[in-house]
Image (cartoon, rainbow, N blue to C red; front, side, top):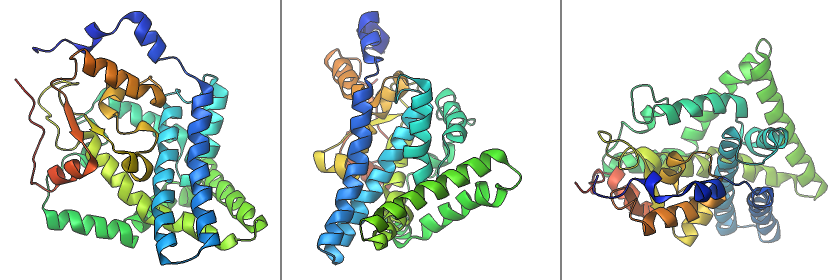
Length: 310
């Protein structure tokens, strides 16, 4: 490598500071996610109509991804400094409402970090299909927005939790958590006089959430060089525009390369890590795209794999 190694660019004190957790920042991220969900629902309650409903679905779907990202933080134990608080909030405010399970995800995800881009990577199936044709990408987007992908996810979640809840305590815990959190959400909306708004939550999970989750998966590892070690290959950072941070890339999920370098850096410190490494030349040979449109062009064959400098 002609550029400096990233570890050589950071002092121990700088790394220690980057790893420092600030609970208030995590509470703010959680509050923003749920606050935007509430605001989107309030908008529809105030001015129901096709445009406001579609807008709300995209906002809520992105914030459901945002909650999944905070569950991911909790899986790395970087959401809150206290492990009990970290796991409780990660389960009940992040994972269960979007029909996920913190403990199951934690074990699965650590394997991804250990074996990124190899045959042992449990996420390899999200990487290998690309590039695909433009028509194939359009079909995938249509399946997402029509709810076909979401229904498949729902069946998988049911078979993983609901159908096994009687004999499997872990599945029962996840199913009870999903049912409880969604009933609480429905109860709160009923108390507010608008129980029908829960349908926005369910519809977003089935449609726009699956779309942004797909875009996230493509952006993180698809069409990155697989024959070189990280950070030059296997992982991408996407420089997100402001509107993309609202509707596609919540909670700094776009700084994925930096996350793989130091996976216990809290999400709110990833932009600083990116800036430090960029200014010091450590990312001059990394796979970095500007905007998710660029990533989707790569995914649909017109751009191809990131070409890294020799």
